[in-house]
Image (cartoon, rainbow, N blue to C red; front, side, top):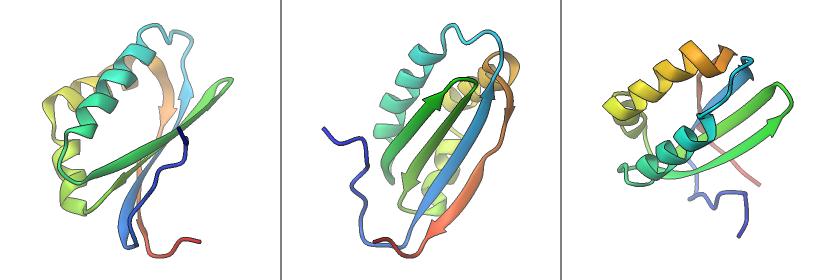
Length: 104
């Protein structure tokens, strides 16, 4: 199984989420798995790519539309996970949304 997502022809959208870890990451892996399973059932979800190194992680999720991203952002389970991330797992994080116009 490839770790690189098969995406449709552009345009589509990427949500880019870099974060720096706090000292306590217990429970993060389980929550991330739950969120992935939840996202897979969201209309407009294409896939996700993730990379982790000491002290840093990067997650990029792909979506068909800005409306799909908005529905995901407003999902109550996802909101709870984001709060845990901010309060417990991440010392710093950003969310960036980009329109993918070309790939090669």
